[in-house]
Figure 1 (cartoon, helix red, strand yellow):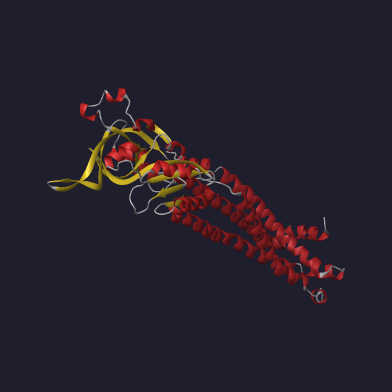
Figure 2: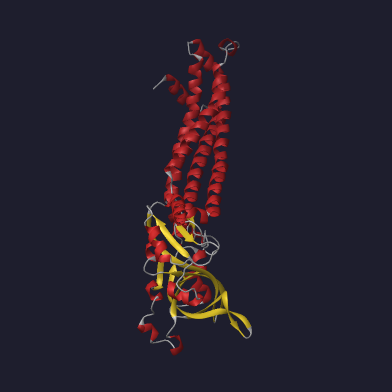
Length: 428
């Protein structure tokens, strides 16, 4: 142990007349501890939000969508699928039909987004989460044991799969009938154009964990959707899943170049650009705001060191008269500031990582104790508080905090190193 480090440790121990200096030193350590812990926890929550949203969005939505944009439905889609499946990086593809409609039953009317899906190929591309009741396979054919209990007029109906929140809001249960009303391509009657209406049977209730999907998105089989909308053998587009989601933009450009006009390939980053851009911006803003806690602690370090320099004028003069150089004196006070920084950062890291890694358990305990929901599902995209520790963020926080602590020691240390021994000892 160098004697500079030994002296700096001795200066950390308060004498009776230096209690105020020690209190400021303790406040500095606590400020750094609080800033580091808060940064780790908040960034872990932001990372968790981003990953959870991405997982849930990319469960229902594909990595890439290929459509014909404003040029109507996609024709000859099996041949287009074969071309897309040959593209390197593509795992699977499936056709889909997209339309907006109204859903009606005896309990009321609500807006709904209808997606036609191919039950054979879609499980390789999209993930509905948990199917709470029924089965996706029943979209193609309702089981005979279910049909036998239905009225005669409902025995020829096809199935529909709805979200858990939609079922709750509309008071729907498995095998209940519902009516879908589509304003697209109305039917001409003597009374004018009327929207298309068709009855369906609820054959499945899913839960994706994403409130927006669970309350608005319903699925029909491709064949049922084509018949309902009178689309013939066409679809709205193709959903594609790739091996590496971060290469989806490159693969989308390659597909676009291969298919050419009038096809349009859009990747998940473009489809959800506003949401993920807002999350990144919020993460940066939170980092800057919480870094101010560390800066306040750094100013406390400066204050404490300046007061210690004023208290130790005689000691510094004696050290200099014994041969200590200006660099040695600087090291003593730099070490003292760094001890404060290292201690605060170390315990802040331990506290921050402990809370961040157990945040869901802690949030559940808080909800249980105080009997309230931190993230209500009908208000926020997510119903649980997610957390993901990105250790590269932790490294940046540690290095940044120690750098701020080091910089805060330079001015007091330089002031101490420039002390004139003769002036300090003149009246001693």
